[in-house]
Length: 231
Image (cartoon, rainbow, N blue to C red; front, side, top):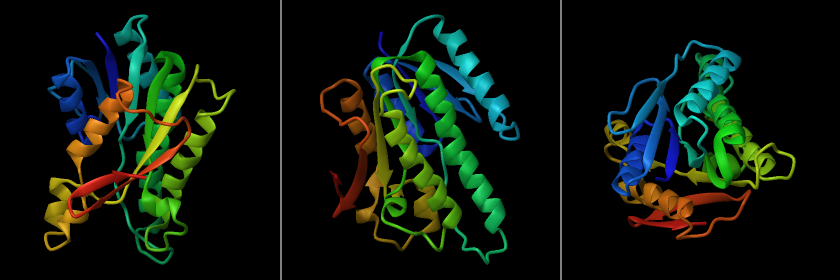
């Protein structure tokens, strides 16, 4: 039975991805602060743990659960949005949180992939369109964190990255159509928000080679009039 590891499996997007792979009879391991009841196995992490401690523990726990087997795909969709320019009251706090949510999780995912992903297995990290387009003055910490993830995709895709026959890609959403976003922005143009099912379907097709993806590429997910295109 093929298997996938979903880092951030309790978030809206992570839950949608787990549901997609479970419907296709994949074995699913979720990593998050809480357990996803739909997953076959769960690893729960403590937010207050430093990167080295947390990453070492998670990677060891993955190895114990796989018991010598290798995963077919690893998808890291952990993250969250924080705003703030340099004068904002919570600028440093929000920047620190962005680094933990996006950079730390991506680093741990890379470490897991190097040890527990099949050769030519799929590794997906999550960036952001805004961070690929230049500066993000109203959300400096968030943009910096996502730019770092973009760099990680490029680095992990190269020879010598530590990943055997890498197939590493980044997905760059604009705005995800989640319940939280709908609640926060009820009057926004929801037809320009990317449905979670669209991303879950794309990742499943990449994982099963029904659709090809280019190693090292950042794929922007742009939705217009409720139609999502991959750029």
